[in-house]
Amino acid sequence: RIRHYKWEVKYEFKSPDCYKKLVITINGQTPGPTIQAQEGDTVIVEVNNSLETENLAIHWHGIRQIGTPWFDGTEGVTQCPILPGDTFKYEFVVDRPGTYLYHAHYGMQREAGLYGLIRVAPNDPEPFAYDLDRSIILNDWYHQNTYEQGAGLSSIPFQWVGEPQSLLIHGKGRFNCSSSPSLSTAICNTSNPECSPFVQTVIPGKTYRFRVGSLTALSALSFQIEGHNMTVVEADGHYVEPFVVKNLFIYSGETYSVLVKTDQDPKRNYWITSNVVGRNRTTPPGLGIFNYYPNHPKRSPPTVPPSPPAWDDVESRLAQSLAIKARQGYIHKPPTTSDRVIVLLNTQNTINGYRHWSVNNVSFSLPNTPYLVALKENIPNAFDPISPPDGYDFVNYDIFNVANNTNATSSNGIYRLKFNTTVDIVLQNANTMNKNNSETHPWHLHGHDFWVLGYGKGKFDMKNDPKKYNLENPIMKNTVAVHPFGWTTLRFRSDNPGVWAFHCHIESHFYMGMGVVFEEGIDRVGNLPSSIMGCGQTKDFHRP
Ligand SMILES: O=C1O[C@H]([C@@H](O)CO)C(O)=C1O
Image (cartoon, rainbow, N blue to C red; front, side):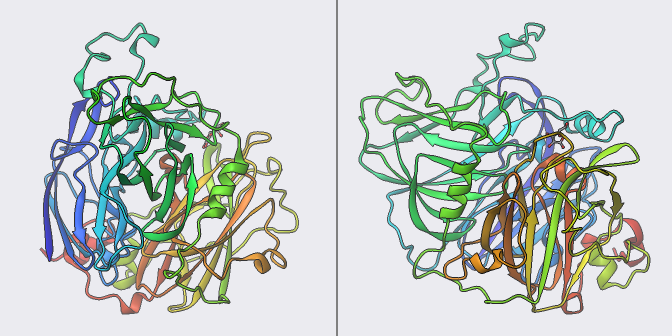
């Protein structure tokens, strides 16, 4: 079947958390409409860029784009941006069931509100039962616009974006307007119906499947439904060997399905909460209402919202990461060895006084000719032909301290992978430029699902740590966290012809250079549609 969508993308004034600002909407909505499809369907999205003076690109997060690498929606990597006034047609097959996301992939547009969910129903029966299926998309929210943030990040002195002003649950939050008395009610108004809390009405005595996705700009979150356990059954479109949590830790770019029984006292409502973890939070919790029918949906629960885990409790988060394994009967065994190991050291750096993030001391910058076109059409000098290194100075680099020399270089060079080989990526975390500080980074790979082979603390040990890899039942994902001062190893097959970004899903971190690009099987890529061209050196190949 074909699922056809027509989207108009534009700026509108909205008050998702009671504070009025410019947001990007799809057909008037943020979050945008949910794409609903069946495994094997073709999804067509005709996007009209009505942003007036701003380019656009939309990425289908978790969809592998097998045979359609040009519709991955990554500006600078797989396509030229969609110009204002233009319409661009994305067309791709959703070949796997599960819960996925979509969002802008141009500059820091995602955090202006261009994001949503993709739900793909399976052809085969699912290995768990539930009565009702609902989605909740989580986000954090800034009042500053993306241009002010971008300018601050690329200034001397560096102006960090700081912690978000609020947390949104399915697009709804609540900023305490009276905390800034200078704000007029025209700008911030807590009685604006746009910022009424998110309500999930439930029928007592049922089992609900909640598909929870996070598209935060910065924050790692702990998600909770007061008084209710959650059984995790799906992660990034793969069935999980079920385990029970009270708090679901979720990183930007991840999706989970959890089963929740509405088996508590039906005479009252309960809190739905999201809280920042992994950073010393200043953002108040996101609050929604878990409304047991027929109680009034706006009736506040009689309790105070449950308190979140300590922000710096890395152990609990690592424990959840380790608990996520492929479900019995749905295990895809990984290859037992790899052909190439790339260790990626994550560091905060300076280049000519500007603050950046780097991988193996190289800070990524996007070329103005998309790699996919440059490589497939053999356009010379479109990007730096030198590949970034496969590792760092393992002997001398101290991951536990601020680097002696924080200087890095900037490049748009990429990794060229031999087609149909097995590649291991070890993400190595390190201290930032601040003392005793290492941050959580969710890394997202385009064009692939990867096996998560292991997580560890401290410096990855090439000799001994691989012996502890889980080769029995590793989960496959498209986004995975590297924890503070830790490492994470993932494995994938370079079997999807195309050019694929792999980057930190924190909006400002990718903007500051925290990413890499992989090319594989470029000679097997089919004819490129001319719709992805028109910028940089692709102008020469543009056929109207
Ligand atoms: O890139 C970042 O900059 C700040 C901080 O390190 C600035 O001092 C921070 O927390 C980041 O993630």
